[in-house]
Length: 134
Image (cartoon, rainbow, N blue to C red; front, top):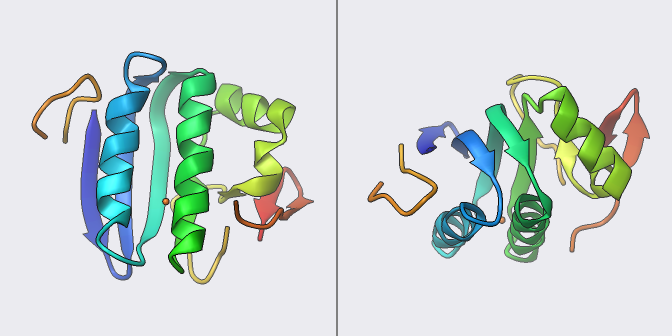
């Protein structure tokens, strides 16, 4: 599931379920659609994501690059431990901005079904206590 809401200057994208080879193309399309509207600040909430494979990681990296290229930002919040470990093993935690919770994203840099229902390369950050900063 993909839920999209607007909070202040941020577009909040709440994801649920698995992000894998079957669901990643729909997520990529939705994020591309949001970013095609112009500079957007995306807050991707992963609290309810149970599993993410390399397809999902690729979508996040591509969205981050796209957002950066158009002058926007993308941050990840509420990243489950198992997904945080995968981000760390792949080095994506150094590229993506990961906030520890749904705290306001500030100036950090860095409900449709994923299966097709109706329903943003930046610079590397530094690691600070397991959280990548931009």
